[in-house]
Amino acid sequence: MTRECKYFAIGMLWIAALPLLAQAGGSPSSGDSSPGVTKPDHPSAAHQSDGERKFTQNCGRCHMPPESFSPHISGTIVLHMRVRASLSKKDEEDILRFLNP
Amino acid sequence: MWNRLNLSTNAHCRTFRKLILLIGALFAAIQAAAQSTPLISGGAGLLTNTNGGSTSYLTTVMPLLAAPLGSHVLVEGRATLLEDFFPKGGGESGYAHIHYVALTYMQLNYLASSHTTIVAGEYLTPFGSYNERLTPIWIGNFQDPPLSYGLGVGTGSSVGGMLRGSAVSTPDYSVDYAAYYSAASSNQNFSSQNSWGGRSSIYMPQKRLELGASFARVTSGEKANNVGVHAWWEPANSSFKLRSEFDHGTHSQGYWMEADYRLSRFGGPDTAIGRLEPVFRWQQIFRNSPDPSDGLPSAGMREVDAGLDYHLPHEVRINTSYSRQLSSTVNRNVWQTGIVYRFLFPAWRSK
Image 1: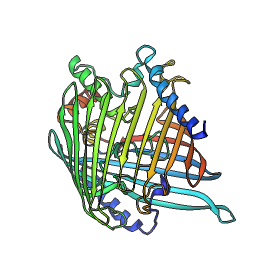
Image 2: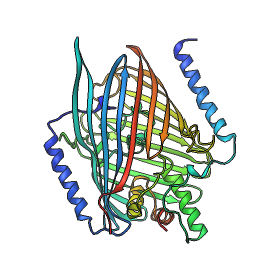
Image 3: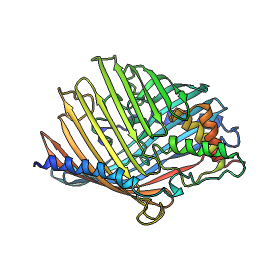
Image 4: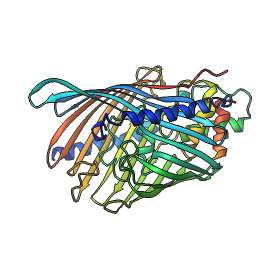
């Protein structure tokens, strides 16, 4: 086996093993999906889950959520994400409600 | 990535003028609503790169400014400031250095409707999945972009207009689109090709699967079509990510596959083990004819990258990676390390 084939084989094994490892255990810790910012206190459960789900699915697809940020820029963050991640107005509103209820 | 940039110091005056424009937009937004204070975000990093035994050191800051003007307009821009220290070579000892300051893009977004945003200015070319989403230093898993990065995106940015948005968004799927037209510009800061194209992708949140296709037609100089397809999969309840893309151009084609897995399952994301993130990338580019102007490798090449990232508290990440490049002209090892800090704060203190 050539050296190139070895690299390729190791790479493929690595890719194949990661999903198995990832799905082997229970649910992930909350830290994976939480933006680590202001938590909604009063919104309806439906809105809260919608916003959190959309935050995780859209923003978390590319990057980790920030550990914290000022509530004064939450609207700007979501507006920026609306353009960058091609969110609809409804998605923007749900995420903003989750970040800054 | 850096050696693919057109480094120049002659453009500083023009860059300065553009920065002034950007700062003007920022102050125009000073009356923003309580949640819409302009923000400054981005990353700063200290990076090392040992390529074929030669080590270079690079410090960089990539700030992004986003300033809303009312509820329908957003002005945003990203700049790159870097200082690169590298061996002089040619038998000389010691290090030389160059610095580079430029705007990566500066665009005005008008949110025309729930599903349409009109973009004008210099913007990141919407082709494939890497250019718009993974180029920020604090997001990308590896220092260097894929070998086929230049396919379809050219210099990375376009000058002109773009329509983009969410065509449809339901709990089961969402479809987004982007269509652009770029004028030819030889301005050192607003360099772009005459081209048009677009991208569309469908995302299925239940399966956490995204599939997309891109097209770009370059109409200045040698006319050329570029096509690309990408697939991203991030299984639910998991920290695993698999990203892949294939691009085809007139003189070359290539693909990359990238996988990473944050070990947060082992005790949570804030434990010593949970902060680790192994990353892997396999990529290949095929050349059918030379084209010194496209910024791609001059010969077909395969590369395997394996790395380990460590997420420290306070938005600091340590990146390490080893790459093996295999081509018909040279085989070499590339070692890269870096420490990257992500920042995000209001442009000024709000009342």
